[in-house]
Amino acid sequence: MYFGTLGNMKYIQLLGLLLVVIGSFLPLVHIPVVGNWNYWKVDHYLAGMCWGGAVGVLLGIVNNNTKIVKIFSILLILLFLFTLFAIKAQAFQYFSFMPFKLWQEKLAAIVKIKWGWGVEFLGVFIILFLNNKIKSAQI
Image (tube, rainbow, N blue to C red; front, side, top):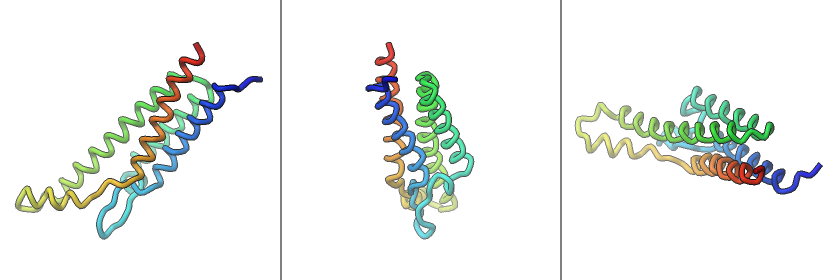
């Protein structure tokens, strides 16, 4: 059986999937005094949705179904963007008791986004980009 370029692209997609799963355990948010949080510490449900999306991508890769891979990759990107927005919104909400808006903004700014997000987005973009290459190689 010939695996050729198509097989190599699938392995690189699996590497992207591995980056997404490993990225969920890396520090995503730094909260002073509390420390670094990964996806599980940010929210259990969002972490479950991230891993469920990763399983969906894995099923699409294994079954050579580029449509499923593309759908789940886009859903993962939307989930990551939603999580980033929710983290920032929650930080502003957490300090809403402060009397001045400037103080709220300053205190909310101490919640920092960490480097784990780069690994998450890199992994999902590898999956999505190579999915388009595989689709054109199959035609």
